Length: 67
Image (cartoon, rainbow, N blue to C red):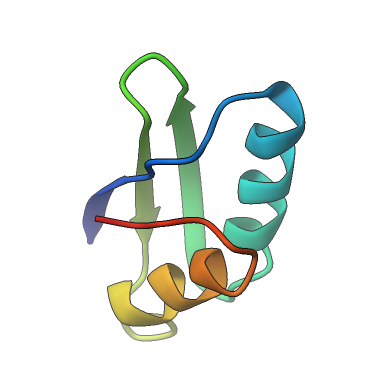
């Protein structure tokens, strides 16, 4: 599966690193690409292990606003 998530309050390289770590900690995530210009995170994952709701929750737990 592939999901593209919009993140409103992502600005710095530290934000990118936090988001990458949070996404990577989910079992089943294959790849993750982050664009600070578009404020988007593209995630490729195996939906047998994880779903988009879990990925969104892991970002919201860090305080990011996901649209």
